[in-house]
Length: 180
Image (tube, rainbow, N blue to C red):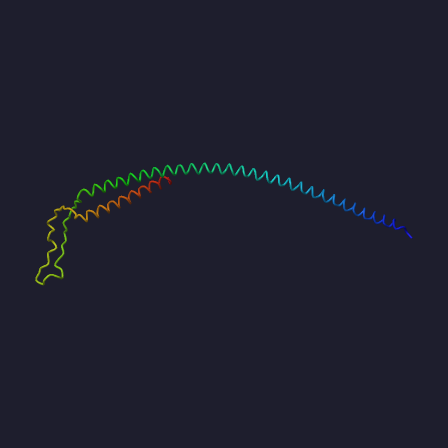
């Protein structure tokens, strides 16, 4: 029979060989993962450099566009201020003219009509119709004053019309200034 120590030694040698094989495989695995980690680290550095370059480019572009926007906004603000001044002047002029109209009576010209109405259905049967030539010879024009309520309303309508006209002229000037 064999010595039990020999078989124990054989088992220990086999175990040692298996451990040695596992160690060699682990070293190869570690080396492989180290290389992969290095490749990934290099790619990460390249990506970080690319992102940093894109960030610098984007920051520069944002700064340029911000300056352009600020310049355009300043120009719009200036045009707005000028337009506000012009509109204020127009409103003041309209108010001044409206005030002048309120202070004086409105004179109207009454043009003589060449046609007249005949007797209506309310007339008696014996009434004769007014001839169509009645008053045709009188072509003189008469002048008079409008009643107060009519003068006031006419002044309001004129002020409204002038305000609308000033707003239209203002918008038209801006439109043509921006679209040559």
